[in-house]
Image 1 (spheres, rainbow, N blue to C red):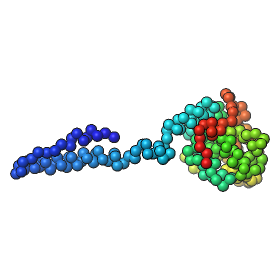
Image 2 (image 1 turned 90 degrees about the vertical axis):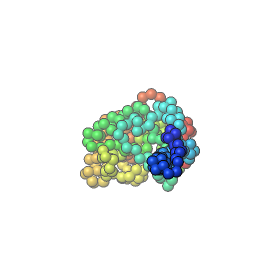
Image 3 (image 1 turned 180 degrees about the vertical axis):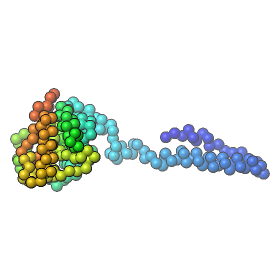
Image 4 (image 1 turned 30 degrees about the vertical axis):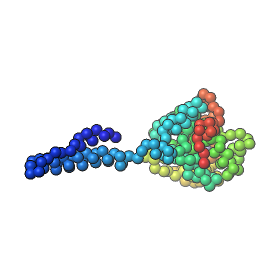
Length: 257
Ligand SMILES: [Zn+2]
């Protein structure tokens, strides 16, 4: 915002009876009001930046700091690693526990070498008119523990006593297909539907769903991912390059619910 217009607001000096001077005084009043509004409109329309930051609505510095820390563990934002990818982190809304596992500000990170494979899969799928939509990627152990507490079924969630999910290393990803314009397509089940219809070997009888699942699995395998039997939406990168280790939300300074 600038106050430079304010310098044009000057008092008009007029002598009574001089009509030319009166016209000038009247137009100067109008001019002054106009300039006053030029000064006021930005003030009225723009909330103070400090106020927004204090409310936690917008904090680019905090995000930059989290990304800087993530980079040390080879974690990168999925949206930067995979151009055109759609992201819908379902654990921000709810989970098998009945509560969200993530706050709205939760970033979607992936190991950088796994991200390169995901980028390759996205390229392959684009030729068939599809895009990937990410449901979950790097998952901090804090969230994994909360999910285990809710599900307690080793077919679907790795028991923390046996080790951590590969999600905690940023090398597993949960995803589905959408059309290139982002519109939904039918797949075997919804995310985290812990039942027989979650199987990667589809037996539901809809040839369109079977064909689409095959397209997804072929693209992901070609890009270097492994499928698992119990969840059609889950893919592992068993050969990430560079260092891998589990990364906690605390490591990155991320708040959990
Ligand atoms: Zn998964």
